[in-house]
Amino acid sequence: MKEIYELAKKAGACSPGLREIQNAISVNDLIRLMKTGKGIEFIMETNFLTKTVYNQYRSELEKENIFLDGPHKLVNPRLVIIMGDTIDIEISGFQVCEIYAKNSAVVNIVAHDNAYVSVELRQDAKVKIESYEQSKVKEYRK
Image 1 (tube, one colour):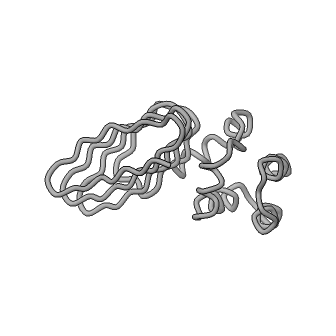
Image 2 (cartoon, one colour; image 1 turned 90 degrees about the vertical axis):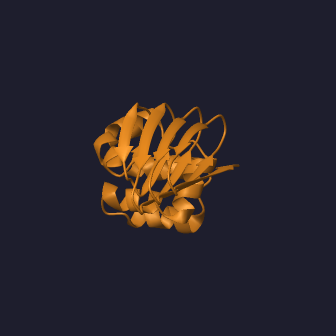
């Protein structure tokens, strides 16, 4: 986990964020930190997560819907962070989903019923949206 601290420091993480990384006891603690508002913003603004580190913790990250490559298919996720490749996401019922995509990620969304999806896109990320019934998909490009 020291490697993650060094990568975050090199990428410009703030002092409070670095302290939280130091205090993390497990990889799951670090993943919880990544999924906070500040963590998501840091991920979206930097490329601190290297392929090597991602591969080392791939199963833990993918279990929490954080992806560096793909393809992947998800049904009714709550939060998704994708940093490359393709992901197909289906949302239905009264589900709410936040999606953050960057680099060359391609996000294919199929929303049904009363589902609500917000998608934030950065760099060259792309989204394809199919929205049915009363579902709503909001796209934000930064």
